[in-house]
Amino acid sequence: MSQVAEEVELARRLIAGDQTAFEPFVGIFQQKLFQYSYLSCGQREDAEEVAQETLLKVFQSLDQLREPDRIRPWVFRIARNLCYMKRRKSIFAPEVEFSLEELGPSFREEGGRRRLEIADWSALPDSLAMNAELREILSAAISGLPDIYRSVLLLRDVEELSTEEAAGVLGVSEEVVKTRLHRARLAVRKTLDSSLMAVGGA
Amino acid sequence: MTKLECRQIFAMLSEYLDGELPPEMCDQIESHIHGCSPCVEFVKSLETTIRYCRRMALEHQPAPLPENLKAELLASYRKSCGLDS
Figure (cartoon, rainbow over the protein chains, first blue to last red):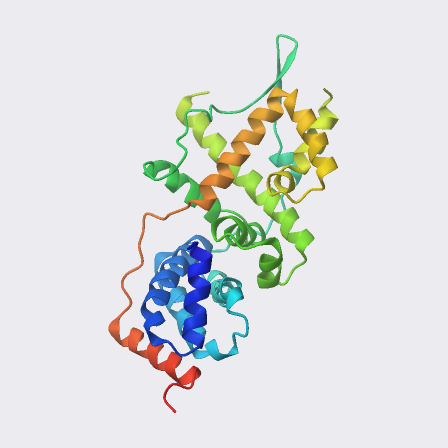
C-alpha cells in the first residue's frame, strides 16, 4: 500500500470509530508535520509545537472531514495556518519575488561555443540517505526561500500534494502554484549548484 | 540553437517534468533538448533537485509526544467522533 493510501485508510477507519487506527495515524502525521513545520518555520521548538497543535485541531474536528481521500491537504491546511502565525512571530524572510532571469542558466563563451556555467552534478548520489552534508544544504536552501515559494515547494515536492490540492491549501489558483513552484525549484537548484561549485572549486 | 529557444524551454521545464504540458508541446521541448547539451545538463540538475526534495528526510526527529498530550488527543478524537456517547 502506498503511503497516501495508508493515510487515507487510517483516516477512514478513524472516522468510522476504529480507535486502533489512532496510534499509527499519530505516528505518521507527527513525523510528517514536524518535518513540514521545521522546514516552514525554521526552528525546532516551533516545529514541535506546530505538529502538536495541528494534531490537536485535527482530532478536535475530525468529524468535519467529509472526504478521507483528502486527509493530506486537510491536515496541511491546518499546519500551514499555524506555521504562518509562528513565522510571523519568529523569522522574517524578505518577501521578494524571483524573476526567471535571475534563476536561469548562465552561459560563457568557450572556443566559440556557448557553455553552461554549472557545477558537476554527475557525481551526486541518487539518494540523500548517506549524505548528511547535502541534506543540510538542501534543508537550508528550502528554509531560506521566501514564504510564497517555500510554501508551494513544501506542499508539492516534499509532501507530494497535487497542484489542485496545494492550490486549495494555499488559497491561490493552480496557475499561481505552477509559477511559484517552478521558481522555487530553480532557486533551490541554484543554491545546490553554488554549493557544489564551492566544494568542487569549479 | 538560439538563446531565445533555450529560454522559452527553460520557462516551461517544471510543467514539462511534471507531465502537465500538452503532448505537442512536450514533443517540441524534447526535440530541442535532444540537440542542446546546455539544456540537457540543466534539466538533469533540475530533476535531481526535485528528486532530492521528494526524498527529503530531516536529521532531526521530533521528540515523542508527551503522554498527557496523547491522552488529550485521544479524548478529542473520541469526543469529535461521538465514541463516548
